[in-house]
Length: 378
Image (cartoon, rainbow, N blue to C red; front, side, top):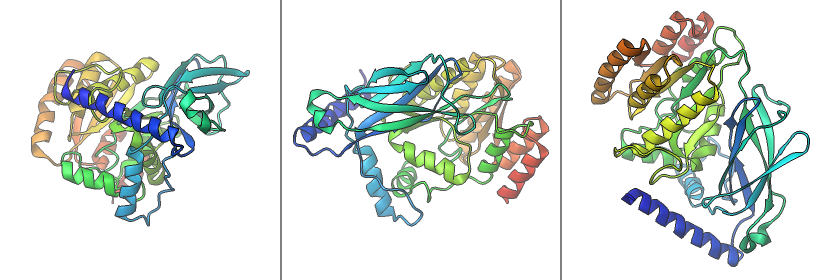
């Protein structure tokens, strides 16, 4: 066991002990179900969420001060999770399926539904979730605790799917500068985070492809922890970026449960993203994909591996240049070898106008979509 995993296990034990004591003393807030956007097909999908004590978060606003944002971020990470509870997922025809929360309060249930819930929002199917049982030490907290998972089911008319990174690809986090990144993450909220010029218009153009219909599904894969889910989901909505499942990590330290370890210092990041992307491609074997990331971390390496592992499945890879020459220099040899071996272009682009220009020229977006990116880019 490496030191990071040892620290993660130790923190999990301490956190669980604090939760048990708080419950015994009657000091826990009412329980709350966080349910996350997920994805699947008409025949198989999954529901993921987390049971925890309410963190006392209030709606984010553009008037929130850095101190207020810091307080909210502290509450997100200082959460009290509830393990060993039974949660029930409800499906049509009165079918109810139970699942038990794990050590850190998370639950995931993979389903083979006989029928889909009716779609309320295009592409999205609501799945009701409710708490039914608690371990004895938490029984005093049992009440009406419910949530609704939103499951993405792409239509058969989808032209392609889009898998995108978040940090410095959609949202500015300065991930290559640890102090700037911490200041950005801790002191901003969904309203005050910066976005990248043209990203919303480019992603909307990809959503509609050549057909003009919003058929093409989006998936966001990030090494950010699930604690930031509400901030990231609100940010996408506020910026007009297409909604999609946010595939985040359960831990900041150690290995993400179920990920494959890599013999590098960055193995949790690499293993998590590769695992999630592989699962998306395996779920939709008849759909091709566009990959979007940045040169700041390991996206070029991860995406290169994806292209080689899934021949014929990736149309193009766009890597946004974060402005660090040493990192940009690593992309050229990867791109050259990838195109030589597979014919897939991995493009280092200075901005999303350059990416949109290439996409329009290769029949991925319309001329109107390109014009919208140009107008938003300024």
